[in-house]
Length: 386
Image 1 (cartoon, rainbow, N blue to C red):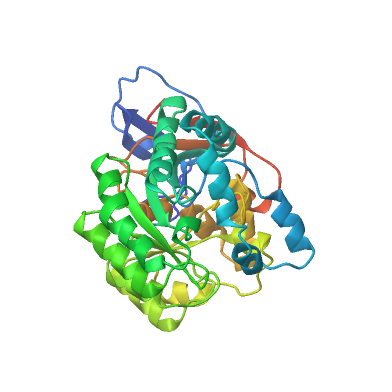
Image 2 (image 1 turned 45 degrees about the horizontal axis):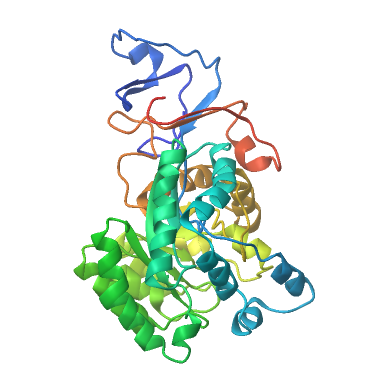
């Protein structure tokens, strides 16, 4: 069984017991308390881990961007596509045209792919509506997925993802609209678990991001940040200084940013799917993050333009192969550290008091989860003890 609170612990002849969906024992069967079990499931020496957590996705959207993939194969850069009106704006147009029911229907196959590989908790960002009614629609669709599947969804408001066409040349005015109108309305409707911003050369400046984060803090909402994917604008230090849950991407991250994250306990969320899909060459500073004791999570970044990926197992392989994460780091990255990146303390490890969200695997050793490509050894998925 792995991971446990103190690290990646392996227990031979282990037993997990739960009551009302909460773990009451996780450890050797020989040390378990006397249990009057209503149901006993013999896993036949299969491996048990916490249910996987995908802590960074853009799962709810309409349309696709396959044509942009073709453009990039011909040498057009991601930035060039975005500046020509493609990229996020392309998905914005399709998402604005879709109804909430259509968004739910188009998202379910992507969500089912995650569930089929052991995911029990998923974060879903908005950011393809870029106007109040459409951001609301995305977040409502994300929440509605909990009524369609046995899954916990955490919603993140990413209104500051790109500048919508109606605000061309007026980025500060758009941030005003987000902070004074969109954010209070969506928080008031109970649709926001966290606030995120894309602080980049093709996104928003550090000053604009700070204004958004100050507004989020005033609303009592945790923050996260997309930063360091294309450049280092100082957003990581800014976000960590405000106790951000996580900073995500981080291909371009300096020592000051790492030190700020270590001090704040901000989780580094690495997204190898986007790194691979964009054929990036600038590897995140994994050794420096390790040395500083910054917790590392990994996620699919599932989105239509830069990471059309719905396989957490493939993410583990990519993280190990491209970023040289160890097997232990990969597993912790989709369990314990992923839960920290979402501000969730009730899952991600196997110990009494935690939710009984489990993944049961047909493997001989944990390395198989990161080693194989295109192979799914999931035997069963348990959500809240069921």
